[in-house]
Length: 332
Ligand code: MN
Image 1: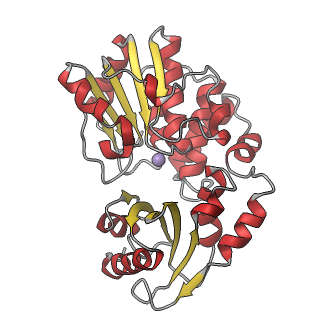
Image 2: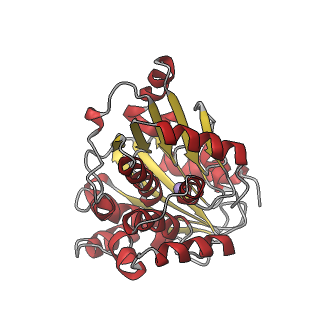
């Protein structure tokens, strides 16, 4: 048990015990924590007899690497999400705008008298629901879902455990940032039947060959700026739209993990071109600079050591804004 308030946990459990029609939403371009958390909780509700749907605004289909998590076929296209729901649960999503085109479901649900349960671990969470399970000290939203399942006294089955493990292993950087309590939670998930090697291969280490030539093009753009980020160093690379078009979202999202291994830079940034003049910027820090603050200055958000934002402009303008945000970001 982490620092969640017990009354928040019991209120959320009460909502779930009586739910008969539930929509669970993950943020746009869902990662394993957002979608795994939604699918684990969705499965529990489904087994209790509720009508359950899980969705996200983009992309149109579940990212290939995460499809194995949806054993019961709970994911529906965003176009099939009703305008409002008796119970809407938003997972790993600090603000409604991170729901993209589904953001309007939050207000519509409130207006219709429904409940909005927000389950999240971002420090920047706006507490936009009617009920909240928000704990910035939790390493993953999956940990909060596990607390909720314990509160409900739900025995873990393998598909639930697999979904939660997927969130834990990715959000903790392969357990490098996991506390003893999180390792203990992971042990429970393994005891419930998760195959950690197979799962990590499926969701983290599995790329088509096209990843290698794509990576070669992207790494050719890598530059080191030792003076940037308050003299701590910045390494950056960019993924033009014509290069990301050759691969899946999984390959593009994995570039940052290669770039951030550069020892000469405190901060790693990858600029991904979504369309001409629109860049998604991923930021990672080694531990000395708060990149969540830098991302907020750019209109985005995230965690102290891992964050992101969407920036509009040319690549040079975008880089200049990233440098400026890092120059002003607080040191940890
Ligand atoms: Mn997360």
